[in-house]
Every structure is written in structure tokens, then in C-alpha cells.
Image (cartoon, rainbow, N blue to C red; front, side, top):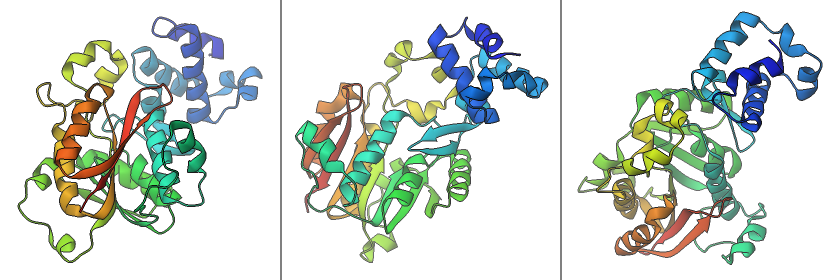
Length: 305
């Protein structure tokens, strides 16, 4: 099979540009071919049975990241499978924002000035203890562990399958992250702090990219996402779109140290409601940030106690 043969097979599902990009991703990430290799006919020298099986999965609608088992995130390769969300470029922007504000050597100031934000918010963690809630593939937790000096990172997820993938990624990337199977809804309803928090070992930063899509938005979503990525990581109840933000905020009020930071990836449709919720929960200095597409996608808040 040639590069053009594969692209032609995918054109019932993608336009020409998308088909070319998907096939290039398949050949580069799955087989290590450069564009030069492809132009020189290396595709025809690949194991054809394996290649045809992968191409068939693509024609059936499987996301290419699941087909090759790899997704790129913040310059690193993460293993992914249908039990976890495929890391998005927007989530990488969230990591870059956190790294820039927590790591004084990073040039976050240049980015912040464009949106009128402070270059280094007061009370920055700059290492210390970080908690990632709903870690999935571990992409956020691992990135922060590797890129923020002296960070002690813990990551939670309700899914054992997701945690297995996250641990595999941490091991492959040599990242020191503690993974735990925990349900944030359950944790947020406990009446008192767990022993480690009572002893004064609170965290300086909590981050989460929780489920934030309401079911009524599904008609506008890519069918590949709906068919293959885990619903539990995508959707929040139609009648309670802030369910997970409320739970994380409640837990953060107990777990964060004074002036600790809370970062979220958000649904732009509910930004105003989320700002009101965070204010009611006692957070201040609430700062929203747009993603690369101009959508209000991230928020940072400070615990005022």
C-alpha cells in the first residue's frame, strides 16, 4: 500500500487535508517513518498485513491515536487506549499556563501580558504538592511532575483502567507521580479531612480537566469521539453541568493551603456560573483564559483563607 492508497481509503471519512494528516500520523507514530521516507516509497516496504489491519481500524472510524496507541502532548509521547481520553492541545495550554506561573524560569510573562494578566500570581506553588483530579492518561500530572522543579505530584482517577495507563506512562517517561483510585464526588462529601491533610500537609495546587460536556452538545461532536472515547470522562449531567467543579471546589477548600491555587479546564458555556460558584466557595482572584481558538477554556482561582 502506498501513502496515496491509504489516503484514498480514508476519504469517505475525512477531507483530503485531514486524510493526509491522519495517514502521516499513522506512519510516523506507528512505524517511525519521516515524510522523506514516505516520499521514497518506504510505506510499501512495511509489514503489509499489520498496516492493512491498522488502516481498516481507521476506515472503521477509530481515532488514529488509539490505532497507534500513542498521542503527543507537550512534546512527549503518551500511551493511550479507549479507556482514557486522547490528550488535547487545549489541555497542553493549561499545563503551559501552570508551568509558567509555578516555574519562575519559564517565560510565562510574555504570554500573560498579551491577555492582561499578572506575570506571576501571588502565592505561586513553585514546586510543592500538586494534585491532579481525574488524571486519565496521566498527561497533566506527568507533565507537571517533569516540568516543575521540586514538585510532588499526586493524581486521582475513578477508573482502574485509566490508572493502569497513567502508571505505564509515568514509568515510560520516568516521572515521579503517586496515582490513587479515588472518586472526587465521594471525597468531597466527607465531613472531615483525611489524616495527611489534618497533619498540615495540604497541597499548594489542584488541577482538573473534569467531564464538562452536557448531553445536548453531543450532536455537534465528532462521531469518532462519541463512539470511541469514554463517556465517563466526557459528559456531565444535563441538569447539573457544574457537578464535578462543585465537588472539586468543595474538596479544594479543605485540601489547599492558604492562598493555594485551583486550575480548571472548562466549558465556555458555563463560565459565568462557574465564576459565581467559585466565589461562593470562597475563592478569589478568579482569572479566565482563552485557548488558542479564542474560547474561554481555563480558569485559575485562589483560596482566600
